[in-house]
Amino acid sequence: MRMPLLLSAAIAALFIAHPAFSKAPEIGVVKPKLETETLTESDLDADADDPAVWVAPGDGADSLVVTAVKNGGVRVYDLKGKLVQRVDPAPDGGRINNVDVVYGLKLADGSKIDAAIASDRGLDVIRIFKIERPENANDDEGPLVEITAKNPRRAFPQRPKENGKGLEDNPLEDQNTVYGLTAIKDPESGAVFAVGTQRGQPRLGVFRLVPRKGGTVEAVYFSEFRVPVVHKGQNLREENENDPLKDWSPQFEGLAVDLRAGVLYAGQEDVGIWRIPIRVRSDMKPKLIYETRGSKESSFHNPDSVISRDVEGLCVFYGEDDNAYLIASSQGNAHGDAPTPDAPYDDSFVVFKLKGDDTPELIGSFRVGKGKKIDAVQESDGAEVISFGLPGFKKGLFITQDGYKGDIFSGDPSQTNFKFVPWEKIAESFTPKLMIAPKAFDPRRTR
Image (cartoon, one colour):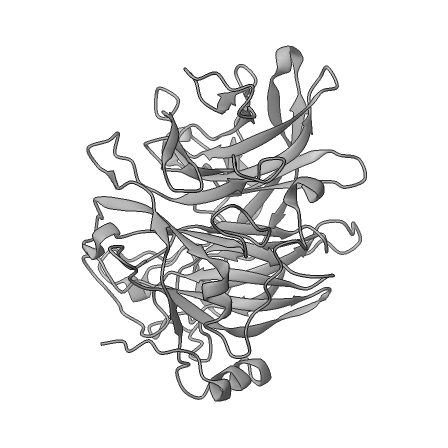
């Protein structure tokens, strides 16, 4: 049985001084303040996955949480966790996997809008939704209005060959489709890009959001990144349905951008976190900066890591000046039909201090435990953090998907949702405390 404790000063010092550990670290526990409705299989097989926050102008009171719920499409909530809008998936197989938000997307007529961008894993399309401000929103439709261009092109019509040499046709039914997603805005040109990962592949695509006639937008392929399919002797295409410790995938999902430094962080689920400079053309090669724990049944076994496979949702907390944290979900596999528990690393979140061009510094971990009449979080697929103060969350907000709503564990969880945690609760679980910066970073001015 895991015994999560508050992080002691001695352990915190060990985290800062030594990225590798001789013993398992203690992990702080924080309580959620509120949660969204429960999503169930009876509602279009809805399954919570990835959240993003739209910060409204003014005092932020009308801010929204836009979430991907896979076969259920998109759900939009307010800052109290109340459902504001339900957007069902596109017919004929639409499946929304990840979402992000961007500000000031330019349309063909020169006007600018805020937008939510989503990866449609089912149809291999990047979808774009205009976010209508409350005073302009149609009560019958809600704040999100889809503006994806008609007959949009597929994100990944091809896939890498098994031998890694070249590309081959990629049938839609094989589901090597757009998966993880984040948005990037070039601060100089104002151009907006989406980075999407390809399900089942060691590949990330960069797509420019191009305005079309009639106020629509299309995501058009721009460039890509690839990494090797073998890591430390482990073939990442090796599969084993009977033993999770011998089951591998080369795919990426979790993505986050340090907007101030111009750096993309990408989580390769079984391998670790990669760092990709995106504003320096001469050095845009991916660099692995932190590995997962790998597997005891593999040549890739890293017992010093504090991230248990899979590494999932990534997000960036912005502090004063250029200070920032990268937060990663150490999802693990402690539950389900064939659990392989890896205490205390399962169901936790790992915090790194970002250091410009240098390798991020490991700070420590926390877990989202039980709150008042709210269950704990397990196997988080996606998370988002806002350092900017918002109503109800004056010192910042952390939102995470909960893979097992109600702490009901099974191989195919039938209930999921999202938990909201005040950032100061997380900051105070560390010794020394993490940064709190409610006025340091206004996403509306930077994204």
